[in-house]
Image (cartoon, rainbow over all chains, first blue to last red):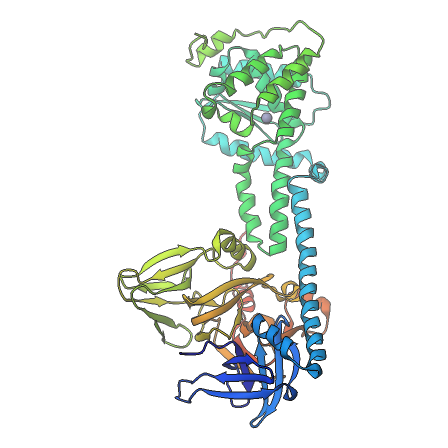
Length: 381
Length: 227
Ligand SMILES: [Zn+2]
């Protein structure tokens, strides 16, 4: 039966990579069996007394037991790696070896500990940074966002906006465009200290969606308008979108993702990842899924904005609920603005707490606006 | 399984003969040609996370391919991406090698590939990331290099100094220290080069005669800068 070697033996007549051998630990010392080699040299045993050996720790990770002795053919070195053999060796070794053995064991422990400690510190620090950027410390993200000038944000949004519109069927004029412009005008008139110039485009598409890019570029799909029962409902979505822009939510999301990948790329030395990611940014901007806290913030500030603009805020709530209702899967808008019952409830409570006021109606007639897009005057049965 | 290096030198190819049912693992782009009896499976060694960590941490391609002679005996031709020599080692179950991330070409089914964290200093200074591959187990292991491959044999206690970027593989019975080659630490850090490993035997160290990083820099100077 061929022996399965468990150690490497080095010596002048052996190859530099060592010769595999089988080590047995016995009471008096070691028996080393050299398996027969390809040149036809027979298997042979060599016995060693413990008294002949000196031991230390060695190898790349200092986790191998190195035994040296002077044999008939000069200096021999044995590298033992198998934990079982090392354990047996330590148990059988006489007193004169136990001290160096303990020292070797201590070296191994220290090396392992050092290795573990360094890596747990690095791993821990990495985890903290990543988690910090990803989940927790929104403070960091907010600070980073604060440093980005509005001008950059505009450029970012503008290029994505134009790229997107280049492939869309844009509605240049008509009742729908006028209606949306009126809503935006009423809403933005109530924003104090507005650093953005909002631009809005109506796109002919059955996709039920509307989005606002960083910098104030807003796109409304006719598909969303067809689903609305009144102008106030569409204005509710717009008020929500405007507040995502004003609170710079899109930017926050991007910073979070950039930060995450940036940290990973820097640590792991993979700079090409950054380039590819920047390219993806354009796509990212439109498919950006807002967080729950951001949704609530946009909802509540949106509600206040509607109120200040004297647009009936209940339209916002009914519309959100209707969108989230029967064919949720087909409403694009919900994929980037995750809806929940809690969101609608929160809005209702907030609205109930506001003093009553008489809303001012829009100048357009909503059924006509809807009809101009080829939709039936009402979606209600 | 039998393997043979064809066209030894700068543009070698490895022919591996597989008996029915045998398979080898190869670096994912390495397969050049094979018998129709060979099936190519993209297998994620060490599971998805293992493969993922290998991709990110060692820069190794996501998958190792498994080339399996599932429909009868056949042969596979393998070649590395870069011009350079190939060396075939025979792992005996005791000898283990650390292999620099681009050095792996193929391994027999008995060869175990492990991503390992290396020491902090080498990870930071080596420029190869924190992870390298550890090869253990039994069977054929083919390594490739950039340029010619040179084997340095070290007796117990014997030392040798190797430029970091020329390392391909080394046995785990060796130890090494990272040292700086140039006169200033600042120069070493800013150039990212000039670190050397002082190896200490026993064991063998495989080095490559060309430095991929320097070659890249040399090529780059001829590429016009786009405006
Ligand atoms: Zn939203």
